[in-house]
Image 1 (tube, one colour):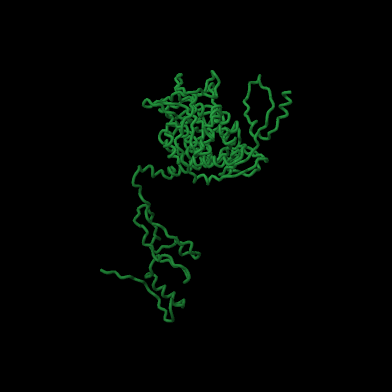
Image 2: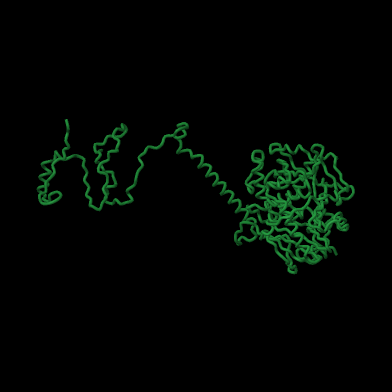
Length: 562
């Protein structure tokens, strides 16, 4: 049986559209059809400019047993619908996603039941990173304010670089060479020849190749062994070779490596050039920064500015030189068995205990009538297949993992390549100089040690974490160090200096710009530069002291002596 739709009684308006205006007609119609009107049909006055809501909501769920019964529930019940409000506007209309939440595909139920109480793992990591970043920022600000001489000075992200030597007003600048011109230079030299070999070498202890961070070894101190950092013109062997006219240009491996790797340098350095007759001598000043080792020179992380801070650039340079010397003697077999050469150590006195080092005076041909002699150093020797191979020994030092971003104790065993890549980024110039020195000395192998502080705040005690060996030429190719370019830089500087008149000059690397300047100085410049060593209290007598910066005698010291 088909049931029709009963629309009820609809009043008829013979006078126009819409319901009749007559109150009586409407009232009589409504009174006569009360039983026929549909129930629960809301009525809300609206104008044609208002937006209409839903005419009926057929999406309501009436089969939920937990839902209380409400007689007013109907598909036409819009008593709680804001769309029929007289103050409804465009902002009240929004699209609601009625899809049920997705169910978890895996994992125990209790994890999802307590999801609101337990934060997600990713959120924990993000918050932890934020906390660490805040701590690091606060630590840097604290160190910065401690190191600032003037609290009202503007903040600087990095320490202001200073020149390695004070430029005097009477010096005459002859030329300045930007490093960009060095990149295109190339020069090939034939194989060098050994003129003289001096000193004695101890054998390398191969047990250090098996050192790991888990079985680290304490770095020992060798106070009884003497180390020599003698400049070119003070070397008696070079003086003898110069008198014999064995070459035209004379230098040391440290000075040559500084010139060869100049484009990678950031800190300022200086080299004294002396033109005597037709000969050219490259020297270093007494107490020069060439005797130290730079740390974090090419890093983007600024170091503390205060010189007395254990992590300042100067303090780290002294610490690195101290570590390098002790490391080069500890990893040797100290049983008295040595490899001796034609001549003894030219700088040691008779009966004096010296470090294991051999000096190879080698000669390179730069031109038809121009030769270069350099004193090169090797620190050890090893026998492989009954053949002796020379070794150079150097040590990288870790002072604080927060600056490098890599903890050696955790990464050396599993990610040694990442540790080396970080060191190449932070110490590109130092590693390039070590590699060039090994190539100049003709070393068959270069050993790199990883030495770290026992504690980040203890700069006196260190441990050896690992020792790795590399072949110099292969390592040079790995760090993009071109031998032809290195010799091209040396050849260009030699040619430039040979055009100068007789006298004394100084090459100074600009502290802020990638360029080197050539100054003409007086013949007695740097003659009174020396570094004082502390004496015992019972021997402390103040002699006349020459001020290296101002070149004036300390009057107070003279009065004390008198």
